[in-house]
Length: 138
Image (cartoon, rainbow, N blue to C red; front, side):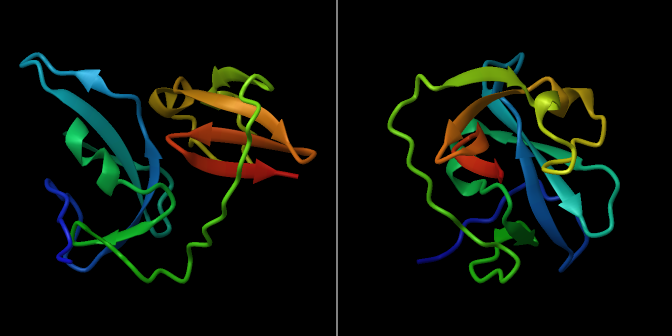
């Protein structure tokens, strides 16, 4: 199956970047729904933002690496995990600035920090959820 390329792509040719965060959707002045993706370059101290149409959300995978706008299918730095929580009432919504910095550094960026995340306990571990991606803190 052919891969779909993300465009626009503001990084150098063959530069590997990681999708760090997916912001909440917003409606543009022309009526289109957009989602802002925050990518992190190697050795970077702040993310780079690119907006994509809402329909490309299924191509955006937090924690995964991209090169030339393509998702790297085999990425040894990514360790997927499955987590099931059937009691969705055992959690609260909070701002992402509530995430422990050692777990997920938001670089003091207000746009990222004011996003909402779901905070919940599962198997005696505190979890945070955004766009079906999980970070765990034991």
